[in-house]
Image (cartoon, rainbow, N blue to C red; front, side, top):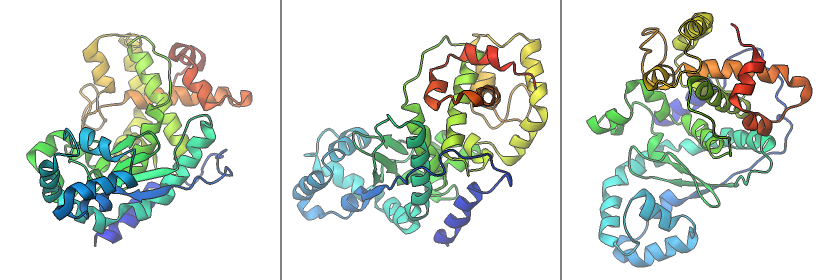
Length: 333
C-alpha cells in the first residue's frame, strides 16, 4: 500500500494550472544525480565487527561519515561504537520503513528536473551531482548541503500518516497543519529551498516590507525551479487557503496600507504576517499564518514582469534591494 500512494502524491504536486507560462529552462541540459545509499551501508553493516565496518563506511563515504556521526547523531567520535550500535537498534525500524517506501525511486526524476532548473538560473553555483541518502534522528535535518553532495534524511519523508510522527514530542515540532512537509513529495521542495537559502544575498533592515519581499524572492525562485508543482505545495498552503488569498489579496494589502505597517519593525506585527501558523491572527481561520511570503511573491512577480524585456537574471533579482523592487513595482491589487 505504501508504494501506491507515492505515485499520486507526487503526480498531484505537478498537476494544477492548465495554462503554464513559458519555461526558459525547459530545454536546458539534463542534470543527472548519482544516488548513494549511505542509509543501507550504515544500517546493514556488521555490528559484530563495528570498528572495521565503520572504517569501511568512512572509506566509501569519506566526506559524510564523520559529519553524520558527529553532527547528525551528535556522537563525539566514530570510536564510540556502543552509542552507534544503540542508535542502529533504535532506528532500524524507521530505516526499514523508509527502505520499503523507497521514496527516492519516484522523487529522483523530479529532483533532477529541479536541479536542472536551478543550475540553469545559477550556473556559477557549485551544484553537486551527488545525492546521499541517510536516516537520522526524527525531527532534525531533512536536507543537508555537504562539501560535495546533497544529503537527504529519509526519516522526514515517511508520509504524514506514519505512526513515527504521532508522538507528543514530534507533534510539537510538526503539528497537524505541517503534515504536508512529511510527505515524500516534499523531499523535492525542501532540497530546492535549501539550495535557494544557500545563495548569497544582501542584508537589509528588518522591517515588514523587506521581510515580505525577501520571502517573495525565495518563492519566485522556488516556482521557477519547480514550474510543474502546484502553488499550494510550493507555498505550503492548503488549496482552500490559497483560494482565500487569491480572493482577498486586495483586502490584505488595504489593511497593511491603512495601518501604515509597510515599514513596521514591531516584532508582533511582523510575526502576524511572517510566522507560520494554522491560521492568521489578524484575518481569521481561513487564512494561513505566513501570508507575507504570498504578498512578497506578488510584488516580486509584478517587478519581474516589468523587467521581462530587460532579460534580468535570477542572480540580479537576488541582488536587487527590496525597497527598490517595492518602489518600482507599484503593487496595488
